[in-house]
Image 1 (cartoon, one colour):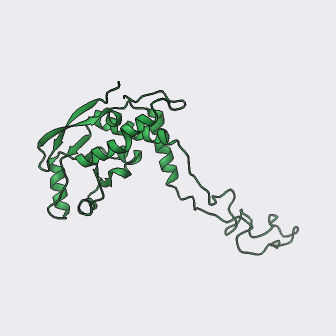
Image 2: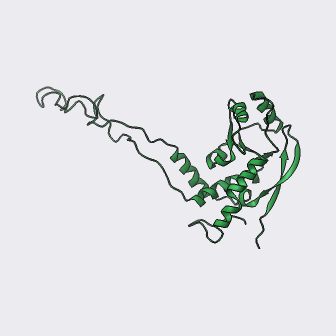
Amino acid sequence: MEVNKKVQVPVYNLVGEVATHIEISDEVFGVSFNEAVVHQAMVRQRANARQGTADTKTRGEVSGSKGKLFRQKHTGLARAGSKRSPLRRGGGITFGPHPRSYRQAMPKRMRQLALRCVLSAKARDDELKVLEKLELETTKTKEMVRILTALGVDSSALIVTDEPDDSVVKSSRNLVGIKTLPASLLNVLDILSYKVLLMTVDAVCKAEQLWGKKLSEEGNSASLPGVAPSITN
C-alpha cells in the first residue's frame, strides 16, 4: 500500500514568529522539477494571453485612387503605379499583422504537473512561507508593509489566500512587486515571476485538495506521453 509522504514546514504568525508546524504533501510540494513541462506551460500561458488583434491595411484596403499617378514615359521620374503602393507614404503595408489566434493547447495533466513542479521548487528552495492566517485589522498599505517586513520579505512576493480577500487585495495593490491571488487561480507564470510565495494554511490545504491525491489517483496507472514520471506517491 502506497503512503502519501508528508514534509513539515514552519507556520508563521503576522509578527514573523513560528507559531506551529504543518505537514505538506509530497504530491504537490515534493515533485521533481521537469524543466521541459514547466517551459511549455509558461510559453503556452504567455501565448494565450496575447489578444492577436493587431491589424494593418493592405494596398487593397487603404484609401486613394487606383489610377496610375502619371504617364509611363518622358517625365524624368521613376515609373509609378497607384498611390496605394506599399512603396509610397500612406500606402498599404506588405506582410503586416492581421487578426489571428496565438492560442496553444496543452494536456490537462501536463499543466497540473507543471504547477506542482514550480510549487515544489519554491518549497525546496525555502521560498515558500506559510502563514497561520492573514487577517488585517485595518485595510491599509502600511499594515501589509509591516507584515511583510516582519516576515523578512525584502523582494517580490506572491500572496495566496484560500478565497479572494478584499482587505488583502486593497492593502497590497499599491506595493511594487507584490501580487495577491486566491489558491484556485495559482498559475506557473505568476509563481515563477515572484521570488517569495506566501500562502496561508487554508490556501495550502486548498492547493493540496485541487492538485493532490485526486489527481494522482486518476493518473496512477498511466504516465504522460514523452515525459518521464517524476511524481512521488
